[in-house]
Length: 333
Image (cartoon, rainbow, N blue to C red; front, top):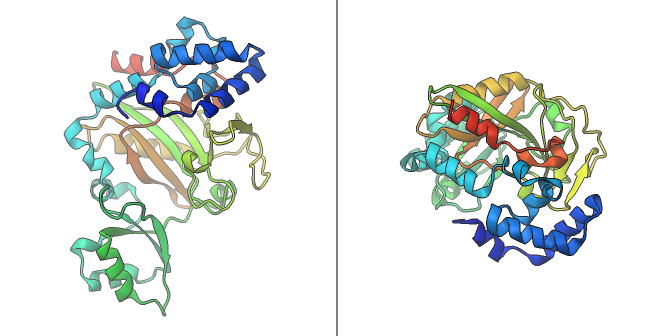
């Protein structure tokens, strides 16, 4: 979206009121006054009603509010650090795979440029693989695992993939420890990196994302939950759900205790992201989605416009200031 005003115009007043009611519940302040302050933040501070709640702005001074990465500042980072003509290298998943093949930990095949014999060879030894669009315009919405066995009609599958301009990847088998979080989804960690003027990569934050129920994805927008990880890769604060506007110390489906969970290979995951961040230096601000397998971490994909709200969520950080000073220190040192 082009500006915070688009978000305000398209936002649901019902959701705005729900967030104001939540703020009232923990602050005790008048709901109408909260709504007025929310509207003022949207118009002047460029902070949406959800962020107002997440950042605990109701209890913050103007000075503390200015420490937060806002929608506009996030856009500034994106436009300043990531060169426009190179953005497609990340948005086009096939181009991304080619550039970062050494970090993927799995094979892939461009069906559009491959023969049926190439596809047969790719399938050999596999009982499942993943397919997705080669670019953002083709095969829209088609992201799925395809299971195969000796009875599968590979020719028919090949034609389907070719017709929909999809490419295929080997499947990801996540670490059993990560499956405890939610066994039906790959529960990725989001690691955001920033390159300084000397091309040194800095990890800005790491988030744990968790699917719920029978979800096959861990996306927050699909109902998943998340939290900020500690410096040693542990869950030390509750997880948050945008959908329910609630925190969870136990998994909402399984009841598993989330506090104290430790991500395997966490330090290796951070190092992997720092190395990947130095591969394409025209894109200096990236959010990496990392899967953890028994053999170690691997990159699922990279996002040149990382979210700014989740790592500043008071409910999962227990911090009274935002991340803007951290970015400013690296950018201007």
